Length: 331
Image (cartoon, rainbow, N blue to C red; front, top):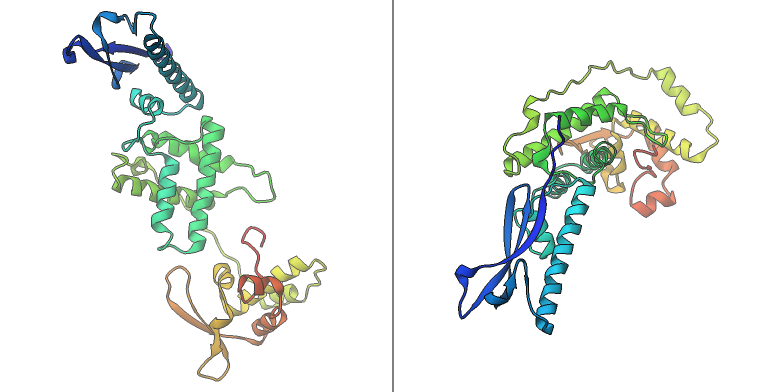
């Protein structure tokens, strides 16, 4: 199979049809793979002095204008070469807009444009933890584009079914440099579900004509969740942990066991959420992170003991939290 040979050229011409009093406007023509675009240089020159693609003569004005056209030609070639090296989308229009510093209203929207727009429009609707997961997916986009495509971004119109399969395969084979575990099947599928939602948004915005996810199916595996027995929980509670930061994580986990609060809910728990209940004892009054539904639970003695243990902890006081909880990754 013969490799496709790209053609690119920059030339200058005068529009004799628009001439008046022996002078005509000069245009720059940029052509890429047979498609061309024209831009006026906002300059009229004597038709009789125009030969080929430049002015003839030795005056300072002639030399200066020819140098200006040479500079434009050089900038166009440098732009083209940079786009080729970065494997970015190339059109005559894109090169023209770069050379002449034109505002681009209809520039191709990219995957990272889509991710950024999704974040802006959804951050007030979705929980902080959910938006953080979208950021993680975005980071995988960047790694994938760099490792598999040697580029920083890609137009959403170029994302096809193969791109989805390649991204899924990349996630399944990703080996983190740090202590974190690589994504398992359901973790991979969650990234693909978030990717699908972003591409659905692109379709609604008319950034793409067809959503490649129409052909793609997610495959979540059912997992059997095991629960701690009372004896196992007791062993965790009484285990001697000489490293303080690990002991703090353990205590907050025990607090979650006795309250039923998820990590994100403990993270957002504040002193104002602790109030007296109808029985006269202390209760937690909170709203579920995922659905914002109000929920209340009595503070059992062991959960209350954890709160009292860390009541004066500087980290909790600094962040305005009830407990000194670390990030999800550190936890």
